[in-house]
Length: 176
Ligand code: NI
Image 1 (cartoon, rainbow, N blue to C red):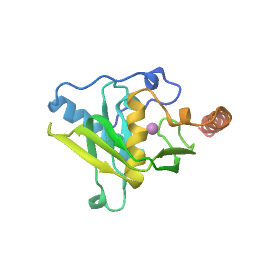
Image 2: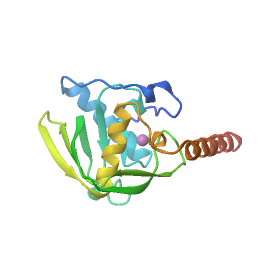
Image 3: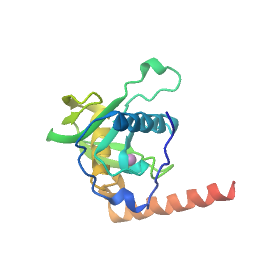
Image 4: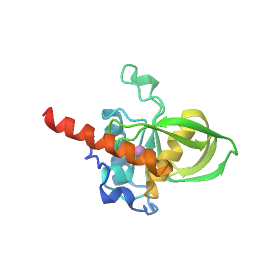
């Protein structure tokens, strides 16, 4: 397995609408393995294909990406994931994204979602996600339509966050 290059805001690929996968083969599975490795290496709990330069509808998810206890990991690969139902209730969660390093903001999401997808072995699956998993699913599926969590913020909150991101990057440059 190998770690993939991570694309960060404002790379244009993050704004692309991704296309459906029509065949689950070994090449795609290798890519999914690499996506998962990239996600764990960067301590994320979800990663979408455009974040690693691919415009196909693929995400990987693990609500418990533990480094200490590898057996606690619950990786999921979702190909062509689609939200087919959501609860009326919404929740607020403080989200982050590997493509906007070191930033977080509170976003409103549906409390529960039902997701239809194709799995690693090319089987059709459905999952009712709640809690953190539901939030990650909505965040990652958004990525496949070119939507970032900052798009759900008010204009003021978004511009504050982007200012902080700029400062963070300048500090990273200075400390190198
Ligand atoms: Ni993200």
